[in-house]
Image (cartoon, rainbow, N blue to C red):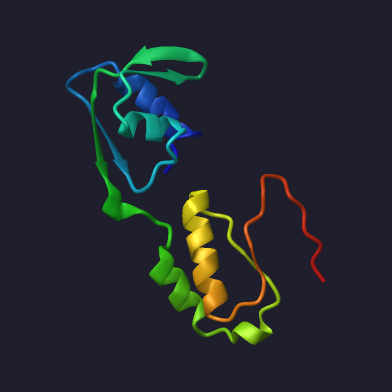
Length: 125
């Protein structure tokens, strides 16, 4: 959850200024996103180009993430013969976590595990 676009931004905007409200963030928030800034305790945040004081209580529940973790992704890949997989792309998560996942996949026998850069293009056969 990045709280970066859509209706959730409007909900936060409409509730951030009232101490009777709680903004409950569930799952992971990228640190530089609006959700990440709220989670880190920012006293003021920028929404739609304007700055707003964070008066509402902010809470988080990390256990509700919809994204698979290392174990979930490893289980998903367990039915694949690493020798038959040409290339794997890791495109989600923080870079240090991606690198660790890449190392683990290489140890499991996957030959080519890529962490693409922003807007990097790959040719697929």
